[in-house]
Each structure stands twice: as structure tokens, then as C-alpha cells.
Image (cartoon, rainbow, N blue to C red; front, side, top):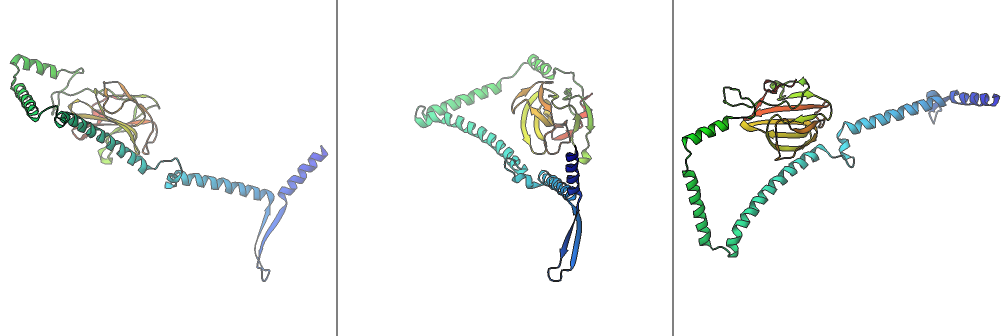
Length: 288
């Protein structure tokens, strides 16, 4: 016990013993600077500056463009170029498909299987068929029946100044509105708070015209509905539908997330457009 106490006392004395650091002029030996230190003070200061250096390094990497030089981390410009390349690839696939169909149609003529005269006769026959179809006229009773069918919808209809038929939209997500529609600040949407992973639903029947990633708004899905309505869903966690998929009203199309550089937490950024104009979703949808 006595030895252990003596060892502890010696260790404490070594840590707290004062030393003087002196800076002298080499020629005149004049004292320029002096500082009293102990081993304990040196250890504490070294640890503090080490932690401060680590924190500054992490901050510098996380909040500056330096992080783009780290292997495995893709830059914002790279993500943007990848999205543009994906869209161009999709367009090229469509054009290639059209070119292949055109080539298949010309192949019989180029290989001699079909003579030019026969091709002309087929074209004329097709033209005559089109003329005959355009000459067909529906009866009055048939026209009335078609108007009744076209005016029907699976939801009730209400009148407005622009059209006699208007969709009743399904709420994409039930929750608290954190930010409303504000054109003055260019916020053409409503932000709806919800838990991560909550299902996001289509507001009406429609077709997916975009389903992918953007740097600022994360995972985005856009639907086109009847009467030229377009609904936009941003900052999703996951996308459940792909481009060109047909969805029904109330069908889950994504889940709540917090993706993209402009997000502030788990929520849905929802936009509603009609004929190129942004609409206030609160006037058309009940989010409660």
C-alpha cells in the first residue's frame, strides 16, 4: 500500500512539475520569450489541438467542394450530367426503335421481295381505307351516347369557369402543412410533414412521365392526368413506379424521405400544374 501511494505521488509530481521554456538570442543570450509548462499542461493542450484539428478537417471536407475530390464521392455536376445522359439515352432508344420499324418496312422493297408497283398499290389501298374511315358518320343516337359516356367519371364532377368537368383529387399524403403555396417566393407547392417511409399515393389516374433522381430535389416522380393536370412529388425516399407506368387514384407510387440538397427533413414537396400554370393544391385537395 505504501509503495503504491509513493508511485502515485511520484507520477503526480512528474505530471505537475513546472518547467520553463526560454527563447534566447543566440548571439547575446538575451531572453526573448519564456513560458512555464508542465507535462500535464502539454498533454492537455496537445489533446485539445488534436481534437480541434480533426473537427476542422471534417467540417472542411463536409461543407466545401473539397469532398468532391474524395474517391467514391460523386459531384453535383456529375449527377446532373448523368441525369442528362440518361434522358438522352432514352430519347435515342425511341428514335432507334422508329428507325428499325422504318427499315423493316423498306426491307421487302430493297431486297426485291416486293416490287415498287405493289408498294404503290398498297399505299393507295391504305389511303382509300383512310378516306373511307373518315367518310363514316355516326348516327345521332350514337353521338348522344358517346357524349354521355365521355362526361362520366369515377368521381363526382363540379363546374368551373374553364370546363364543365373537373377531377376530384385524392390526397397524396395526410399530414401537417409546414409550408404553403407562395408564388412570391417561387414556392409553387405545399410541403407536408410525415414519418419516413410513409406511402405517397397518386392523386388521380394517370401516367408516369418522369421517375428518377435530381441533385436538388432527390427522388422525383411526375404524373400526367386527364384534363392536362400534372402532379409532382419531390424529396421521396423510394420510387415504386417507373416512367410510362399507368397508375390508379390512391395507388402508392413512392415513400416519404428526405433526399436531395434542398430538403430540411422527412416531408413531401407536392406541386399541381394545369396547362403550364401552377395551382394551389390546398384549393383542390384536403390534406387532413
